[in-house]
Length: 566
Image (cartoon, rainbow, N blue to C red; front, side, top):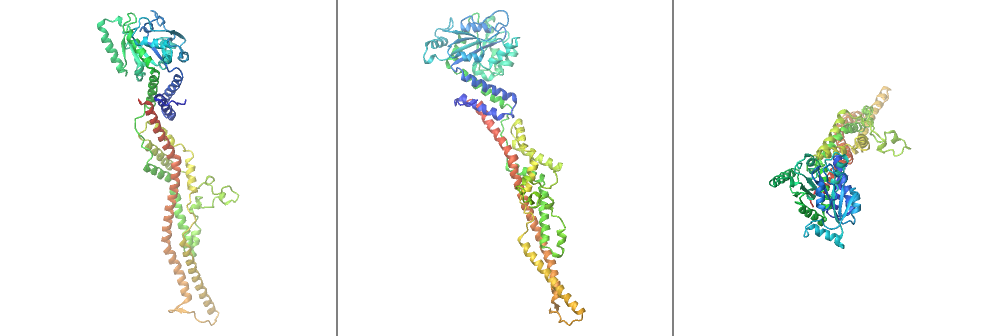
């Protein structure tokens, strides 16, 4: 139901509607249903005559409610008798008939009496006479009117009577509660009606009827007792009238109060404003008034750290380090023993993280061969400890972010944090499989060392060949010149010794550089993996939690706007 009126009531109704929509599934269903009923009832009441004031007379069996109704109207409209109950259906006395029909139809009041002029015996200078003259006079001021309703007894043994009273207590603009000296403290009246409607004190009147049955000296005491009980109900400022339908005592002040309300023409709006405030407070009854802590950088960082660990990223980082070291030994080690490194399987290949290793990536006709959505790592399944770590991290993150909110909203934040529980493990795996780990990529200086190693090996091989030729020639008794020497050391021997020694020393000297490079490569891999997991966490966990907290903030703002006095 769109609320386009920007007056105070329109704005509060719009705020209540917003709060109701935002609170769906997060606040008690009973409070939501009550707020929706208020919105529906307000929409219907505002479409009907806003110029009419509907005043309902409510009372228990024997309170003299119908007799008081007749005394106020000045006519015997309602049936009053010794038998109880006397009122089975609501009855209306209407001043100003124009526009009252649809309103009475909505109230489901079929018995209608259209009246013209003030009640018999009304004060000729009183407000009611002025109101009646205005309604008869026509013109602009003639619009609107007054409707008095005589209702069944709220404590009737007939269930349909109680249902009528309960329904109309939520529909009339002004509530007149009629009590008698014997049952003015009746628990059912106060517990079932007056206490729940305490927020409507601005449109409530209380009448102590049948004061003619009291000794004059006792009237003040009973009125004081009644006001004390009303104060306990939250109705301390409600006007209380002492009246007697038999003697006419107090009838004119009551007429004056009712006519004044009708003249102001604000009772319907005041009643709806009270309904809105009551519904808004019921929606926020569990709100402790705190503001959630929200998503902090530290809280988010701890979540990402935990997810990174639980995803198996540490295994991948170790594999990156080992892969770099293994590839480094293959590329910079002494060529004679490189086969030992080549005999070992690359740990990244074992995890399915070497570029081009996956069958779908090797097939030329495979669609989107590098699409991580069709590629999975070979990481071992998450252990129970890893699953518990991830679940605990998500729960802790949600609890810290929602700290300060009511329990129902904290539960909704937890649900938001876990909204992707089913897909999160696969998505973490996709983050790892799609991360650029630079698997198989070496460092520029490897090429230099590799060339030097091969030169050293070629030098040793050349020296060995040279020495072999000299040995073979000597064995075959050929006269060959002696090998040239340097400082008495034959050059072939120097080539062999120097080549072997240089290659081995070069391998030993570059090993620490390879380990250092492996640590740096592992550090970069961890940073890339953590960055990818952080992006996933923000999208799948942090963003839903933040949206839920923002929703709660908007809900609180709407409640404040709906329940405020202005």
